[in-house]
Image 1: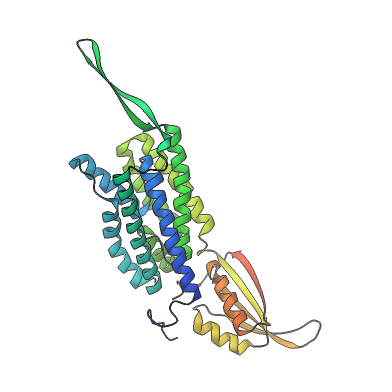
Image 2 (image 1 turned 120 degrees about the vertical axis):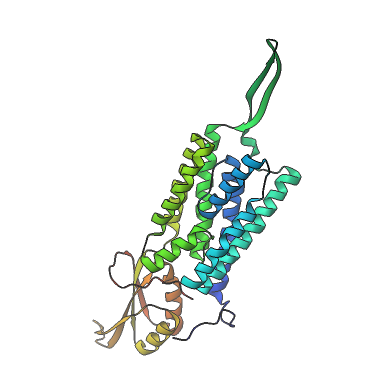
Length: 328
């Protein structure tokens, strides 16, 4: 099968344009959730972003200096991009790089807004809270108050932030890339070892939850809530690990076979049937594909044979040699 050149004329076809749009939009949504909801709430995202938050927070505690989150997000993702390029696909690595660059720019812009204009759309959730009373000679000298988030509002931010971040990450993944970080390793393990994306992510995020306990039990609890909501969103929106069966009834079996084998990476089965009404001989092509590939298959099939009859059976459980490689 001839390899596609990353920079060929056909690289940015309609599907690739859609993938780029999903990646950029998903990255913007994910970044907004991290900065405006999760970081503001004082708890942690998952994967590399969560690790970056932990590092930045620890540095802030030890050195008393605030370091931009985007520096860690970008730097820690570089070796994982190389992994994605080598073990998943060039297109996956390209889209993941696009996601990381978009996140870096958006997070930098949001940090600038907060620094220059003190802009935080959820600041209305802050409430003036008594934090200390300074007493000298049995007299109250000063009452110290700060604008803080109540436990209820922090929980609200965790719920909304986890859901919004999950939607953003799922958009990136459904485009054929990822939001970077541990998503790259999770995809690699899924493609090569059939290890569930959500199971691996739970292990990594579990470590982040434990480390977040250094910043208080409530922070650890709400980070866990964020994780659960995030995983529910991913599990419902990201369908790469679900399998569908496509059956095609056609008179152009050879043309479809050649096109499908040249364009996609799954094998297929062909058998002869007779129409129950016309008794004319036709062919049935059966293909098992990852569910996210179904629309691409149907579009290509009908372009090759507009008269083909196509049926799809979804959410199948199969065992054996089934290729889950990303289409490149």
